[in-house]
Image (cartoon, rainbow, N blue to C red; front, side, top):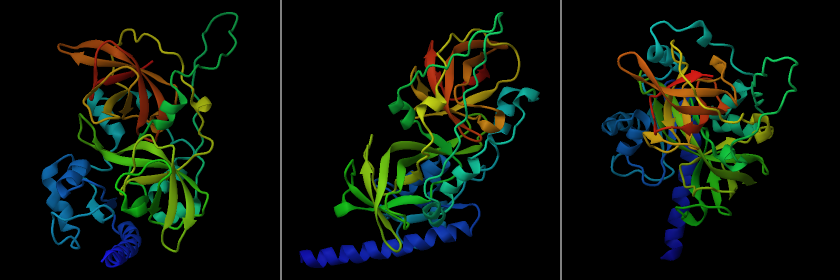
Length: 377
């Protein structure tokens, strides 16, 4: 009986692997859709909550997945075609203009995207493309630190990092779409995977290739405009490919800060991305907030909370397209009627994407909330 059950499990996993290989290609042929890998504890309503921010829209997902004959029966490793929210592509910059002022200032005009963003985006295109390209290099933006205008000129001093390498490495980001590579099966059918465990991913990759293991936590919607900003990607560890098959690969998990499971994703590691290249300037008191349009909005925190405090991670709706670079500082403030502004604290940029950035709350006089406004220092 044990041998029979083991054989059935092997057949089921094998069929799942074949199905998983066909779905990413189909997703690429259907604009407006993306492939979601079911993880432990998922239900259609929970997936709907992550994708749309509304658990009642699960029928929209069910409609696009005729292979699901019973909406109460989906399993870790299953892949679903998920329609992208209608607000996708609205643009984060437009949200900032609406949040701050009816007329956006010339200081917030979009600039050309930083070199290397196109390469980074390919990690989210398809498993085949990710497997062929391997780890990609994205040039880290140099921090812009203004020197004091005094006579005689002072010698340039390299900024001092205010975060540990461990915190910097664990900082997630907001991505436009789900990654292509995903964990679709585990060693010995384990539910919880940690350092030293093996997992199977949905594409053939050269042994020795290293990845960052991430979790697609939820979609982030702009707190003021409702625009879809993308998926909140949380870093949970690293992995190295140990074996390549025709359609799948086996990876060994290492340096896990949280347990992984079927349904988590992999992203290429940037070998040139080191903490010293993204060092932050020392924190400073926010000061007053002059009149004018805001320079950004806090849209999410690392955990699914509505408030955060000092030394916690947050995400803003500004990136390299608006001139944001690692090390840049912003004052956090909130508006109080009539036409008043109260300074709340300060943030510094850790990582800058095209239209969103990961930041650290360096100081605050009260709890920071999603929707609070920012002013560049």
